[in-house]
Image (tube, rainbow, N blue to C red; front, side):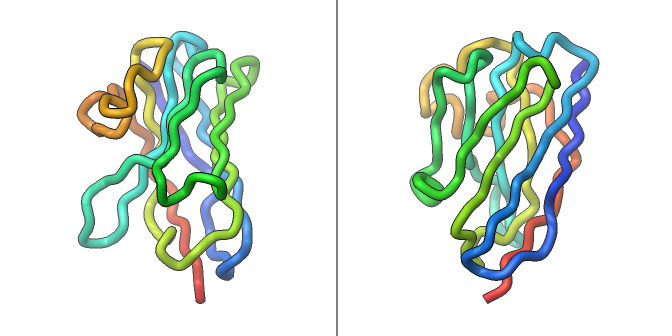
Length: 129
């Protein structure tokens, strides 16, 4: 059983930056593809980014492409989401997810929350205008 704990959320002004971290335990971190999702009030959970076990394959939602960067450090069992040029519409609870396979598969698979096996509790990101 994999446990995921997110950190790094907070309040930031539009145009600012935040880096989210997700620490994993209880499994072989390098065996898992990792991802980030977010959920705003009244909206469905949406895909943000995903990364393969080696970090050589990544996917991004169009809404964050060029502003967000996903990365991982397998030695630290941690995945990161660097968020730059933040916008008010980025306000949401951000969730870390793990998938019990090394690759991220297709984009169609990655964007589907049902394809991910483990979830963190989420961290709030609020971007003020």
